[in-house]
Amino acid sequence: MTADELRLPSAPPGSYLRWIAFWREIESSLLPQRDTDAARVLFSGEDARLFADIARRIADQAEDARRAGVATLSPVVRLPETEDRVAAVTALAKAFARRRKWLDSHGLPAEVAPLQNDLIDLRDLVLSTLVETAYRYAFEASQHDGQVTDQPD
Image (cartoon, rainbow, N blue to C red; front, side, top):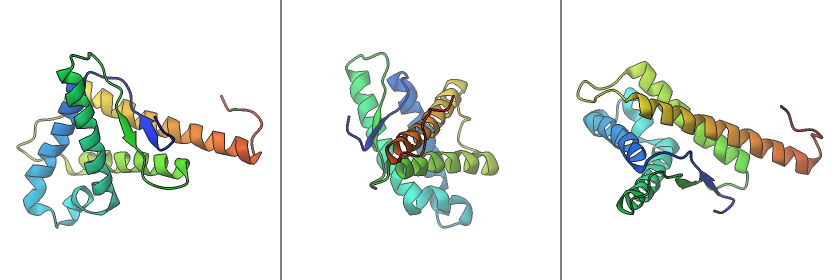
């Protein structure tokens, strides 16, 4: 794993595949409305490109793990290109949070089944991992800058 990569929480490969399939189903159902303000967050801008890349990477790793009979997987995703790891992880966490907020405020399209509880747990664990990683990177950067002497609790 390189400095511009991040390891996501461990889960069965099928869970990651179902989570990605859930979002793809939402995106497919909204494709005819992709130019509306409500759907724009899913189809345009940096968040959309970021999620397309991450979803592809996770799906590829999960498919490989499932074919190999691996029980659990901790996918590795590439951070957005920047010199600042804190900014990259923060951008990723904010993108995940915006998608979650979008779903909470717009609800599911009628033809999409609700996210199952185990996938809600996985989503929340991924988001908390991103936030914790951003915090850790910020702390490490501040150590190098001499700004902080003790790691917070």
